[in-house]
Length: 395
Image (cartoon, rainbow, N blue to C red):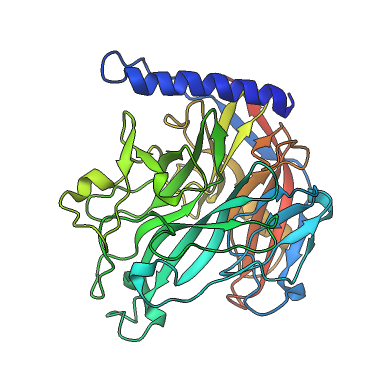
């Protein structure tokens, strides 16, 4: 099924989705049973980018791969660090790493500005010229004098937010609004120099998905005070308006994210989101044939009841998700890679045959993109690989 048919599925989902929200207070329908999905790796390993060919030391794949087509039908594949570059080409099978910097983090030491180290993480464009980006913004206080009380445990000095950037030239440069207009989502608590509760804040978002008149994504988070652990569903009517995103509260999209530096947050529990699945979602796509949503996750251990590896989950409505299904065992990836101290992360699904400008749709045979890091030469020796996979929905 091509994108035109998938769009009709999305519109139907949107009507049903929004109707459930309106009727939730009076007669909530039974939640739809999550689809049954299985997957397997079917193709050989292909190298997309090897840091032996990087433009500088910090030029490494440090995020899940995302892609979009610009207004000249050039594909931009981005899986980058806080100094951002893209791979460019006529299609996903022919992209080449480009040394032009499309965004450079300001390394602003003021936590109230939400722009210390920024990763361009998610993209959405309708015309290929103006592109909205959700940004993973880290406040890495262990790198800032007098801002980390536990330098031997830098996790306590790690505070994250989701912010906004945009490109007006087809993705060849991105700019950020002046703070605080850059803020999309922050937990309702300020950064604490003496924190001992480990890392906290909203973590990297998934892809942005348009459904009817709204744009949706999943935001990840760490557990901290009123905020529970797990990905939350968020949406906005205007992807270019950073402050317009609202989170699902279990019944409707009523949660407004607060700015803890400019608001007196009397009731923090009214400004945190409700998780909809366990773990941390790394990507979000639509299976075009069935209209089911798919999220990818990385499990470094047996937390999902199976071996360490990459997993997928499926949903009909973004709220109710299937149990994690194994996509690829880490042991099998390691066996293919041979001797070494390999670690893996940043898994996403992208389909070169997608006709959607944002590669939001996949067929039964997309590619699994992922990053392999070399533990013997950390942290700058990495490779972005891809392998073709097969998806099957049984219910």
